[in-house]
Length: 223
Image: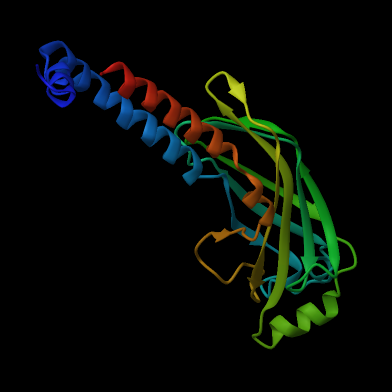
């Protein structure tokens, strides 16, 4: 009488069961990949350009020096290939200096949906208030730079095929050095960072749990 191990091996080695294994293996790999991939990427935000006309040495006229506008070019990037992003209103706050103690302007990007792998540019101008222009102009006239800070706050929810996740808070920012041409010093785009609220995004755990459950069912069905 064959023992249990021999019976079990005969069952697994049956041609039909071998075919099941071959068919199930790609599915197992897919579900594991899905669970891992869904957590790796989140929306990214970049300052492509900033222009402060009042600081440009190319225009020394009274009108140029009294210009209280800041032109900005913001990029929102969804590098994820499996989920879209719905943004609530994106609130931008501008500050004079490297911290948030001196606000000088606000701007709101209306909420919108962004598909998988898409980039969205928002170029506009903000009217500032309370900027110590005399100090800023003096600094750039001495070939120094002036630091502005841009803060971004919004809430997002991710679209997984036919359903949305819960909303997650986003709160990021970056410092921008501006020279005597009124342009940002750094040539590359500046990434907005430091969103602690991202750590609360545990939606990928649900996907991983689903992946493990489906994998277990597939393995069970093979034997």
